[in-house]
Image (cartoon, rainbow, N blue to C red; front, side, top):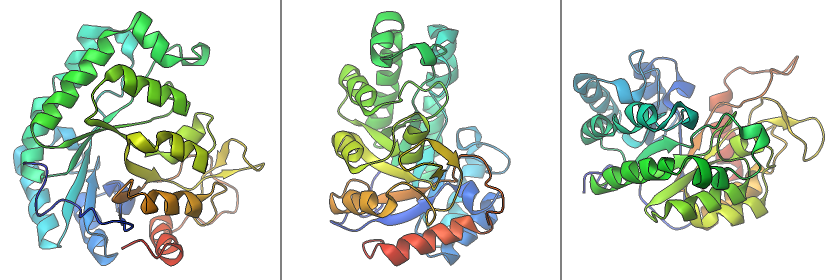
Length: 301
């Protein structure tokens, strides 16, 4: 199949590999690729800052150039991290489909060149987030077409041979609690669709990271994204951005469980959200995060 084969991450029990969003390594894609190789990372997660574009906006020629550069450094592509489906549903079905569903065939054309294992969609946004305790109920009652749009995208992605993954976001995102995530996937009724659990994003939406949260979401997880972040009180809301070494959520226990369960064959580093903490050293955080995980998790390849 197009999304599997020699360049797909190996799924080995109790072992995980690291990657990061390409722009976290460097604002320009070509030095980012070289840094991945220098840091002994085997996989790219392509999102933006790719010749000044997001991954879904590349030309076939640009995609081929990225592929050639990656192969020259011994790298494969783990995920195409599009921002499709991350818009507000209240714009209406026609506009939402034009913006987020219509580009899928073009993304699949690029995927045929870049050969990822997964293609990412985002959890949509709702304007009524602050007054909506149950986003799945809101979607079913007020915006049921959204589920059909996701189904159409997932079916196209899977039919083309790639894994379809949906990532929890922040701000007005439809997912603020694990229960909203699981009820959405039940309503979606497409077992091939899986979750990217961005641990800090769900924390930012009010759910502190814990092993209990992980176990609740485990049946849905295909990939995990990790960021640092510090609270001002134990178990409190995210306030400051930080490296993983200084994070105030249980980074190592959660990731050790993720790896033991073989829940995420590739763990993707992301830049931390939160305010800049006065006096904190933010230099070389990406490299520090790689070193921290490798030093504390022998299961990281």
